Image 1 (cartoon, helix red, strand yellow):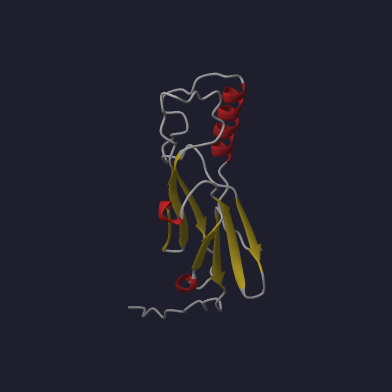
Image 2 (cartoon, rainbow, N blue to C red):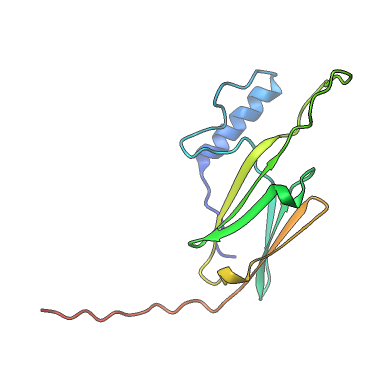
Length: 149
C-alpha cells in the first residue's frame, strides 16, 4: 500500500498529553490543541483500504450530517473538513459528563501518484463518510532535453 498520510510524532505527543490531562480532570489550557499548523481539537478515525482498482477511505463522523462535511482535492492532497456542533444548553437539563469531541476538524492525505484525482466519489450514510478514489496509470516521467550553449 502506498503512503497516503504523513506521520507527525509531535501531533501524537500533543494528543497523548491532552488525553492524559483530560483523564486527570485537568482543565484544558487556552490554546491546547492549537499548534503552528492550527491542528484541530479532534479528528475523525479513518480506515484506508486498497483494491486492484481503487483506494477507499472511510471516516467515522457520528452525529454529523453531510451538510457539515466538505471534501476537496488540491495539488495531490485530499482534505476532509467539517464541524460537529455541540447541542444547545438548556436550563432544564444538567450535563454530568462530556466525553465526545466537538468543533471543527481537518484531515489531509497525500495521494499516491497512481490516483485519478478527478475520480473521487463520496457517500455519506449513518455517520460514515466513504470516499472511493479510482487508480490511474502512473504518470511516466517526462524527459526534458536541455540545449547546451
